[in-house]
Image (cartoon, rainbow, N blue to C red; front, side, top):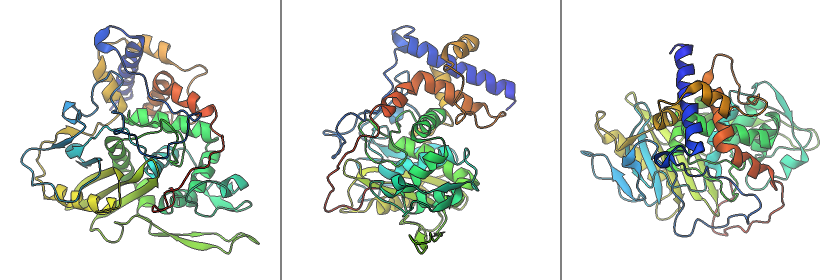
Length: 417
């Protein structure tokens, strides 16, 4: 696409945001953008009665009205769904065409746990130099939940920190990467901007690691959007598929050791491209993965599940098998959008782009974390839209983010990730 065409699309999308948020007519009245609230009690259990349902900024359903359901939706002409898929929220889609083959509560805004680290990876990989070396800190050592074992005084290349983030779900690695990217608050701003950029409007990042905070959320639909992009990018796909990595020794503190990829499908499911697990008391078990077979790629996401009677990874395995058994020409019940601009422009494609750009531009211009490349207009869209749609997310995250919390653990569950 020519740059002029991209700019026109960007302007139209921004115009849609401005019109929506200005309340231009009852047909375009937009729901408030969800925010996190770190001053609220830390969630320790799933949403009572189920999570809220997400939507596009104009209140429509991202990916098509066929996905506007809290229950089950399945494409016509497909085989019977497999037994044992008990998660309250899940989705399986063709990662190439974007056709959603089946889903349950696809836009339910669940706590994501460490599957949110997929958004951290997607956001920070293009922004950080893989050769940059980050010094470990005492704060890294004290991070709650799953840690890869960073120690104060250790020196860790960004490339290794990305592997530690994914392979071992290191919350300490997430903290170190956020520090390298300008701090936790700047990283959360960038993560929320990325969510808007790709059309993941159900997602609100309140921590780089996925540890629970009130209001933080993602959805089966959004996790599929994020993971679809990760496996399409050779750099991030390489991290997802890395089986082991070596943590360096730190004199007097650590002898060095190997870490292993904790994706249950890696090495056991034919054609798997990668996966990410998650668990917290509020999120329960979450999982997202993708696989390729005979040139066809599928992505699957599982949220709010329990390990019994069927593990989330095994539910994902069954859904992938089912998806590969469907006809490639199957018309989906909806589709994975290609960008947030696509969603926003559809809300009001006639809006004036010049007025929109002036009205929606953030004070002081676009964040350096957002403006990745001069030739790439999509991050600029994300930065401007963030100012209009996700500003509350950033403000709410900054206020009280560092409060100390003791979180009760589920004695029957794994460590928080």
